[in-house]
Image (cartoon, rainbow, N blue to C red; front, side, top):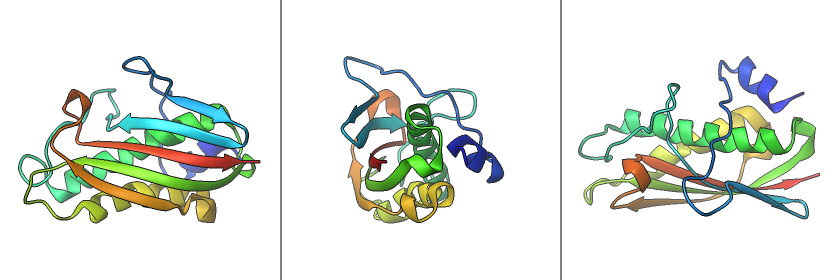
Length: 152
């Protein structure tokens, strides 16, 4: 089954994989490993979801932003390999959250991205993870997610 078909079954539409914002590559395949660079939270209209968890963005808004960042990661994965069978494992997910100093629910926010990968990829989507709060992100984004996958 195609990754995009599985996403559609879940009511999700994979966007076109976003281009780099600066001097880097959004994804690189080395051997059987695909590295997807940090993907910002982009809404359905192509606009950056901005805010700061704990002040201007609620937990629910931040979770939605994390899901949208993960959807961008999946768009890059699907652009590199079409079928779920070609994915061996999501090895690592790194999540950055634009958060106030008082906000402490980073794992709950980044878990929304983790859950999306598991929903689409099944057991192959389960991964190691880092969830970090930061003072700011590019373009004022609420979240940024990167991931590494092993491929067949």
